[in-house]
Length: 446
Image (tube, rainbow, N blue to C red; front, side):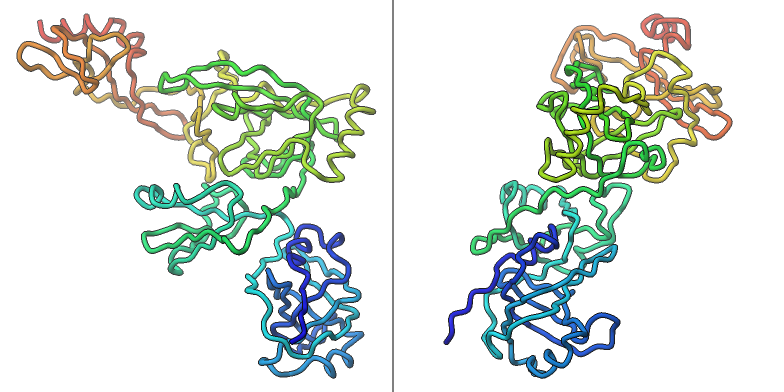
């Protein structure tokens, strides 16, 4: 039997950049069907030995040749060498249209074990999630940039929850107890190239509350600073200013490990896929989460063009900033004044490291009088509740002391003109009642 080598991974190259894929690939036709269409006469499913692709066809100009040479028999799998092709691009796919070819074999056994390729030209990804015991089961099996087969019941595939899914894919996969992940040991696929649907920075103000792909120059990098979070734990924060050819700058803030480990330098190009655009009192900033992908100096023509602009034109550009220092906790009440109705906005982005800080002016509409005070641990830096036993007061952290201290834990409803919210005050309640918690506790029992 004739030994024929297909152009392996051709459809991966085609998906990444259709105009720079191999010009004369050798492909096997797995299926063909005659159709009436504006541009093609036969619709094809072709294979390169690694991937199969359904958005293929013969151009109408070679209809007679194709209909005479390509067997109308699903059991026969011809192999062709494509001499010329064109690309019909649409919003969701690239159609591979063969305009000339040579027939190599009219019937060959199926070559390789090709997997269906989506034809994604945008480096799109799909979210796979697992929880609790399922997450503990699968996490040790996975490595970054590894290749895997994922299988399971159809119930695992669900419409994407856009509020928590920034991949842009219409679906997501949730692993269950009967799902299976296998390493693709015999087939190794390169990770998709970093491809951005780039949005100019001066257009980001129209995308508030949405995700966008950004390619920009790092114009300024601040050192990371240690800040306290709402729960009194500490984390790092780093502010970065970005700029592009539109002479518009916007602030990017990184938190935690990302802030501490960021290695970008001023003048370097940064690409961010699925960046979240935040609006705050008419100013805008960029936020990132686990669904984002960041690369420094990504390989593309746009990166080189942006470098040249920054070196040649940036020094004389009149820059317009659409940001303040992103996400810094303001001491100005008006700067971060928000109505409670703001937090009912669909898809509201909540920073996983920092949460949301804001100010509100309202009235106390209800106050729960029960449990305004509680007995807390007297150990330094511990505020756990204590219970009495054998003359000692013990807390959940294992402390056992001969005395305790009173602390506030006041639950109240705050109302403004657009909504209400229940809040809990701890030590800050001293300003509300005008007395320390210890004094209030002693008054309560006297």
